[in-house]
Length: 409
Image (cartoon, rainbow, N blue to C red; front, top):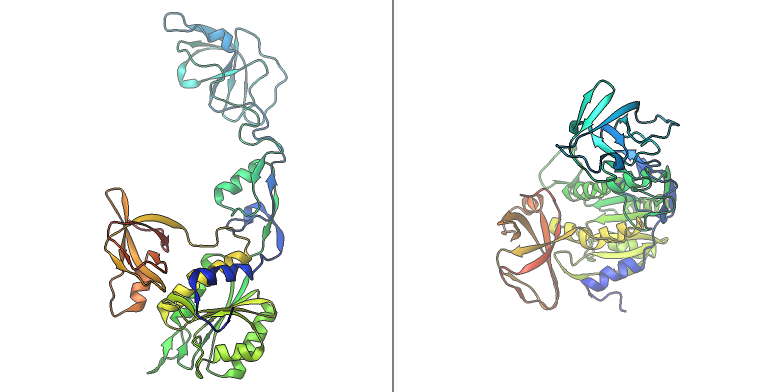
């Protein structure tokens, strides 16, 4: 392939994934693993629960003693003891007796049913039962949550709070996960200011830099960010340091490739392996990707919408690949398109918009062009891609949108 050629968006996505491998895995305590991706198949070490356990405060009984109970024929049983969670008893329960039992306690040997206390009348050391129930009621059997040797998690699955609880119940205290990347974000431009620096006419604050930083931190990546003036030697020095110390590099600005776009020329002079530069993606055409010292380098355009789209559609999937993530994209949901949209037959078009629940359906409202690019980006809740070859999407069409902000109404 001619690496100077503008390539299709889908091709660029595939080339990105093909040239990145997951980082080495590390062993971590299960409780610290939320958001990480498992680097192993995880199996249970123990049964959970490890006993036949009561799910209610009540009375453990033999079902044969109460199977014919009714209001007309109540059953009286003698309470011979009590047991709470963590206690052990050696007695075998006899017919005609009951055991007071609390939630989480081991069901005594010989008992096979627990009657909740609200269905029992108590008089001294005797109870009266008037309502029938089913055998095994209110008992959680040993191993009903997890059984020793049972698969709990597959390699490549992301750790969520629910999955962590599931793994812990199986007795695992640590698992191997893919390390999250250390990333350098480098913005270029004589006009760029960091927050807190003195403002003057013609300068602008580094909104792209902080937006990228925020997205990366939201995914738990470790970030080192900074801005560099348009000085080729300074840019090359920073790039060399970044690939020595970090797992990947994002650059913001200087992406187009003209004489003033020093990021591209700096990488060329450093001898990077350019995989692609210029993608049929709008906004975001000037995006590029390659390797320097085998480390991924993502070139992002300086225009805010182009910067964001190129990051979300090309750089973020590559960074998630480093984490071992199999999904490698933003979450997607179906939505109804509120109004028709024009596409381009030779271009993938990205459209920002808002989401709204109407009549129990999610509706995607494409962004109305206004004077503030940053306001549109700040208020965007979803992103729709119109693929190459699609000249128009009709109103009321069901489309797949990528969710940028899950907090919508």
